[in-house]
Length: 494
Image (cartoon, rainbow, N blue to C red; front, side, top):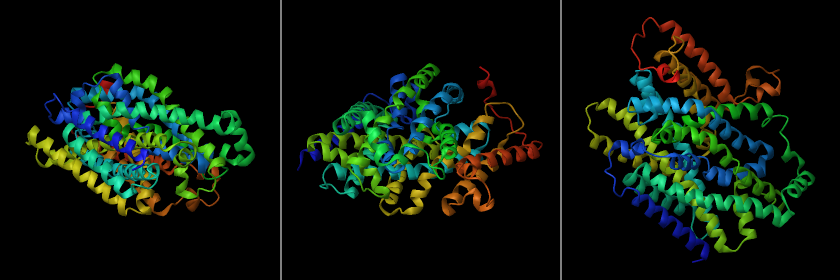
């Protein structure tokens, strides 16, 4: 057994121990399981939200995008920073409403805001189809990281299996608390690994960051500019706006918001998290370095650039540390994803079928749904093909179709009612899914359209149609939608 594999196994064992240990001294009920009874302070909320940023996508895909797509990769820190800026105004209002109405999940929030069980079901379903591909990509990424950093001793299949088992055990025992404890370990390790590699590798091979980019300019200058078509400036800007609004609507991010003990904790995070997000740039430095030091990686193999360059540069024991950090970038986000998805399904489906169910029954159902979601994602991680990969790319496009209903829900207005919200969401989601299957562009409808418009993210177009349909249906049905709603307007003006 090589030293890298030993360190990875130790990290996995510590993660399992911390995840189980997190339940000690807590009487687990559904509120404790789902949102920690809304008692998490600034630091824990910070680490949990950061955990949704530093995933295997950041670890592998961030450097991989820099390697294969160049400057287009900068959309990642740009949209995340903008999401945090927007959250300073929006998220405390959502938290206030959730606290007042005892909301513990995203479907329940929309259900109570619009006083509509049907809307809750729609949101729960959309959240699930957006989450499953995310969980799959984390499990696949975990398999790649452990297999590569163990020098092939552990297969990707076995690594994904072990990871899925670890997550299932500690989430069913500790809920969100297990994720919180492991988030502390993960952020310590990832902070060290990413910053160290992002500084050491450019200086080791090129003598600094400036010489690195000078070398890239000589070898592959197109990596430093936006493409004229495809991943162009219009794609970049529209994707940043789309993903920024969608970031906190991902079920796992929404759930973390509900764990906060105060609005102040959320606002402090909105101020500090953009600085933390800048660290993603270090992953890009590694990917750019690999363009010269590890040439020839094609297609999806570009995501291996960080690991291949690390293995080429360091001894196995340090590769093991990198692999252990990569392992945690999968375990922590997956645990929050399966927990938020399970609680969302429980509140969005089960409690509608069994409205008189007690706390113990709801907790049991949530735990069973955790197992169902992780098993489903695990199966797809083994057999999933191109369709699943496409769906993962469009996950933000899907979840952001909830944005109009969320924004209009802040105001007491006749422009958005239950019928309009549901119709708009379904319309927007249909456009996104159709694009995922057919890859159509606006140029297919308008052949002479300029590329600057054709490259706009299709999710952005879907939201525009979503709003038009939702407002139109709402105005047409206001006379029949007479239900009273605990609307967010009272929270918004505070």
